[in-house]
Image (cartoon, helix red, strand yellow):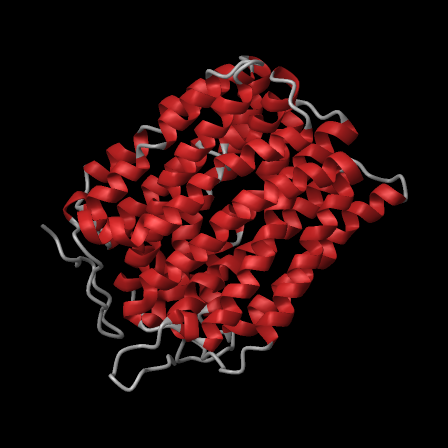
Length: 436
């Protein structure tokens, strides 16, 4: 399913038509999503005067679907054509997000509106994101996975840079609910680009697209067993889930906007600017990841990259009103640089180590382990923010962010030099990888 040059080598992804459309679609929707990532909690803070617990609950309900529906989603996706799933979930997310500004215009905006919308978008995002990671290996050659993941991560990094700045300005000028309209529009644009992909993808399961409930449990069990027995994928999933519990989407995410606005007295526009400058670290990470991984090896780089979250949170916790702009931006920059390099590496390792027929279930199981802790972390962050204060919660998160590196160092990951060998179809490898 990949274009090949006359030399027998895969065509560069810069000239790969289907990847170009897929990449462009993801880039557009990611920018909008980053706007909403800031605008949704700011809607609760500025429009509804939400408490730390109430803001934390927004993150909880938004990521709760990763605990509830990720595993069955993977089994279902392995039986379906993936391109229609991507298109439908984009369109449905756009429709849900439009409800927020409409409720604002009708003077009906409340937490009772925000929570269901956040939950619904979360459910659709589960299906969309699991499908994305399973779709990429169908579009590019195995030896192009690192390049493909690097380019997708570059888009994510660029969205992290541009999205908060755009979101902060839109919230300041047009109010937070209207800023969310940009995300809805981005999902529409993404769906249009995906529809232009003419090369049909194929269902992953030999059983076809029919989803039988009596087989769903067995399929889920196969995905869980594969991930849990794999000596590379299991520690990566556990370490990433632990990091997500404490870092930006989990415990930290529950208190960061409140901390910046109520304790450091930043305006929404300034908060967006700080996040934008800090997210330059993610862009830098995207640009250097391939070179760094090839130079020093996947395992050592992943361990080192996982250690960056703790100093990032220390910088944020040390900020006061006079140093807020510098320390918050520096903290985000350090954390996102490490997170970006780590994500490119761990996603590429997982994709390389998994048979095609198990990709959807592997990605779903890993998403469950990676993102399932996020709603728990957001809830804990909201509770701690109200009990011990916002700054103290950041210190707790900083201490907890040391645990992922420990989990990796106790595994075979530090000895992993390059990508694991692609397994033979139908014969899942539970070990593998070039190890030192």
